[in-house]
Amino acid sequence: MYLNCKTYFSFRYGTFSSKELVKAAVDNGVTALALTNINSNCDIWDFVKYCREEGIKPITGAEVRNEGQFRLCLYTKPIKFPAHFQTAAARSPDPAATLTQTTHHNVLRY
Image (cartoon, rainbow, N blue to C red; front, side):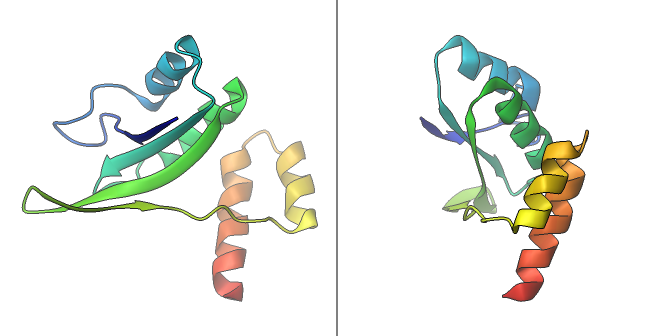
């Protein structure tokens, strides 16, 4: 498991696209992969989609820096989706759209 991976959305630090990162993980037999771009989560949904397509457990987060100095690495907590959203996600050609709605629903509930 790799817990601190970057894509080119970590400006000046990452070189891979989300798709390339996941492909490299597949090529190396990785079963779980964490994306922690620096001060950014721009490509999280693409990352999750590509990981699921390849059977890799996606872990999302962000590396927080201030004035170039590392401060902390945050990881998101997995959300147990309500059954009606799970069904919709299974039918949806774009799971990111369904997940966005589900995440919003869960945030409001807390």
